[in-house]
Amino acid sequence: MLYVNDLHKSYEVGKNKYPVLKGVDFHVAQGEFVAVMGPSGSGKTTLLNCISCYIPFDKGSITVGGVKLAGQNEEMLAEIRNTKLGFVFQDFMLLDGLTIRENILIPRIIQGEVSSEAEKLADELASMFGISHILNKYPAEISGGEKQRAAVARSLINNPLIILADEPTGNLDSKASRTVIETFGNAKTKMNATIFMVTHDSFAASFCDRVILLKDGSIYRQLEKNGERGAFQDELLDVIKEMSMNDRENSLKL
Image 1 (cartoon, rainbow, N blue to C red):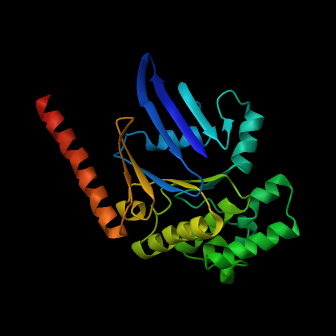
Image 2: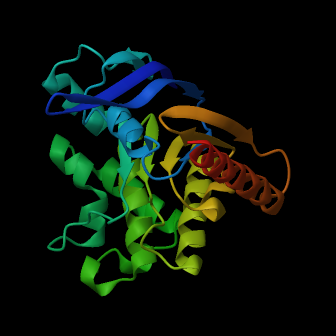
């Protein structure tokens, strides 16, 4: 589904060049729920922006559903973003002047294809995620958790190949966070959705099938969930602590 091979990305500031991604390699299979974690500056956001077609990369390849992103023109990249990718953002990105039903349908509105089939799918997604009762309300009238569940429904309205989620629980309390992550789980189970999520939250990541840990622009480790969620979270926290301890040891050597 998603293949990232030998990905490099750097930024230039004046005459200085700063590498951010240093040969990142991984893949995400159809129907898999994968999280990316790492400290600030590890390259998480840059990686997501490269996959999202928002920024170019220096070297390597990204393939989504058999389509290589490198070399595509802006028109094709815009089509890929709207038809092959679904997006969920930390700040919800709902339009205040539209109802929740209209917000869910935005990708279809952009395509000019708001058919009865699309409206039926919007209603089905709302029912699946427990937000049918707010479809005629506006974003200002609902909770943060409800906004994010509406955003997940919007990300699925075009039947995308993969959902890209950027810190989707970052602005939510623990109860709402769990509900949103369970919403992703429902999408995976009932629609075979493929989800790639950037998060700093080990609790959210513990619901995933696999977690990729980034450090200094490279993959530090990949962990697979083979048992209970709580045990997986403990394993994640142990590895995050290990990364932090290595950083402190290295700074002391300097």
